[in-house]
Image (tube, rainbow, N blue to C red; front, side):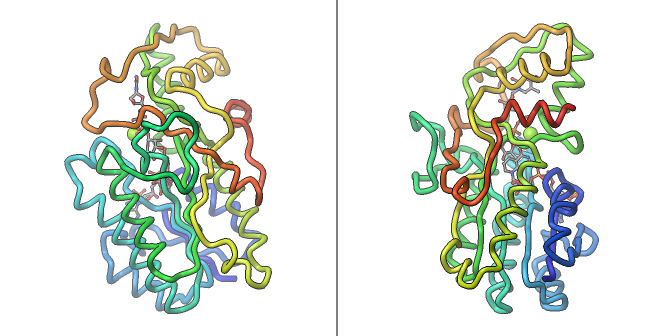
Length: 282
Ligand SMILES: NC(=O)C1=CN([C@@H]2O[C@H](COP(=O)(O)OP(=O)(O)OC[C@H]3O[C@@H](n4cnc5c(N)ncnc54)[C@H](OP(=O)(O)O)[C@@H]3O)[C@@H](O)[C@H]2O)C=CC1
Ligand SMILES: Cc1cn([C@H]2C[C@H](O)[C@@H](COP(=O)(O)OP(=O)(O)O[C@H]3O[C@@H](C)C(=O)[C@@H](O)[C@H]3O)O2)c(=O)[nH]c1=O
Ligand SMILES: [Mg+2]
């Protein structure tokens, strides 16, 4: 199987490049080879390589910056995946795409299921939603894997930010009224590979194409996540809960974006968020 993989310099793509190896020949398309802003280049690369599978963790992920760069975010997060899906359908390839808990507005009491109404509250979430919708409408075989609060030991993420700030400061003031599930980049990659290993059965894609929530089990707030980081890393600083109103940012964030992953867990196991954090830090 020939697999075209984007975003390999990012958190999830880096892990996927390793996790997907047993499934076939992985061809990494970085920004130089396939710029997500260049829709014609995306078409050309797919037509030339004719992959059996396209895996797309590449995205515009700067949530605050997206508020002032909506067109760039839309190109990467909506138009690029739309072209991938269109080209995939033409050559009979399948597309695995990643989306986000930020497609939800956070007003639900309880965990979101895949069929819950979406209503993004920021530009990033809106453009990711448009990407989902284009893929779903394309007629291509696909998996849209919505994940959340991604962290790992490389790249830009909340864990690395807090490890750095926790060494520099004696107090961290962190939002305690936004709830979600921190998810290790390696969990996402390994779970994707475990699901794809099953996809070679006849008729699998016809039966399983669609949206899945892929985040760690359990839930916390950004403040709770920080407490766990500080405790597990053995840092000395104090962690003080604050309200989102006391931490102004260009982009709004949902107050609750906890996702129910039962649908995905019929295909693969998922760890508790704090157990995964412990493994990551080890
Ligand atoms: N990070 C998070 O907390 C969450 C992420 N997600 C989703 O999961 C997926 C993976 O996210 P994550 O790994 O954290 O993202 P990262 O921000 O770590 O990585 C993004 C990747 O996309 C690439 N990329 C960005 N713009 C372009 C472009 N114009 N052309 C080519 N490549 C580009 C980057 O390449 P380069 O190094 O060249 O910039 C990088 O490899 C994304 O779809 C994201 O929306 C969902 C929920 C939470
Ligand atoms: C650094 C810092 C952040 N915060 C708050 C701000 C914000 O409400 C929250 C998280 O901030 P961040 O900017 O790290 O996280 P954010 O960029 O919102 O993370 C999101 O990224 C995208 C890509 C996704 O898809 C989402 O699932 C989610 O992971 O923490 C504090 O309260 N104190 C601090 O010292
Ligand atoms: Mg951020």
